[in-house]
Length: 191
Image 1: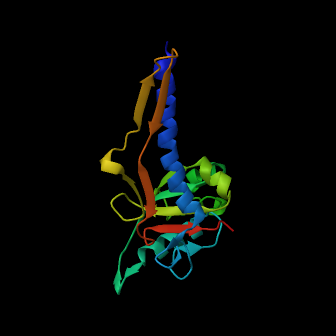
Image 2: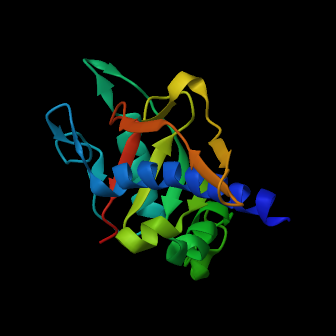
C-alpha cells in the first residue's frame, strides 16, 4: 500500500526537477533575448578561458562594469555554476586562502577567495564539460521561474476506477522559465 504515497511523491520530485531542467536549458541553450543571444561578446557577458583565479577575477570585473544606459551597475557575482567535473577544482580556487599553484610563495592572497557560492550541476556536464557561469544574487533579474497562480508545488490529481479496481494519478506543475536580463549573467566557454 505504500506505493499509493511513494509514486505520487516520485512524480512530484520529477515535476520539480523539470523546472530545473528548464532553467538550465535557458543557460546552456543561449536563447535569443531582446534581439540578440543571451550570452554574447557584444553584451559583455561571454568570455573565454578555463576556470582559474585570473579568469574569475576578470569575469567578476566584467560583471561589475555592466551598464544600464550610462550608469555602471556594479553587479557582484553570487554563484559560480560549474559542471560536476570541475567542482573540486572550483572549490580549490574559491576556498583557498592563497593562490592555487603559487607554490613558490604560498603567502599570495587569493583575490577570489569566497567570491561566490559554488553550484555543481550535472546538467552542465551534459551540455558542455568546459563551460562555467557566474550569476548575480537573488533579487537581481537573471532567469525567472514563474508559476501559475504563484503555486510552486506540484498538483497531484487522482481518480478511482469504477469498473476496474485501481487509481489513476497525474501530477502537473504550471511553470514558465525565461531570461529577464543578461547583465546579471556571465558565461565562460571554458576554453
